[in-house]
Length: 89
Image (cartoon, one colour):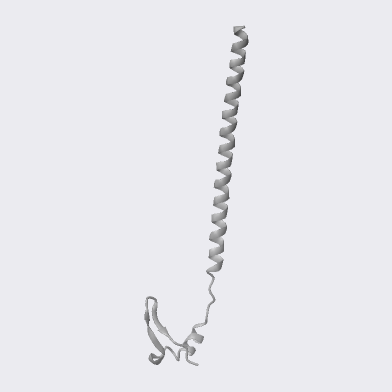
């Protein structure tokens, strides 16, 4: 009878060890999946931000003409990025 008890005890230990091992593998897989999805989402968000930041370019001659060659009469004020001019038609 003691062999039978030891056999059942070993079977339970093996089952318990298998369950713990499987749990660790599943948890590691889920953590890896979440990490990979987070990195992908971050890359896509960064790419979208870069696309949104594309600004139109305006030829200098058009700006100079619109501000009457940066005339003092067209000067509205000075900001953090330099002087601000109004457009003269």
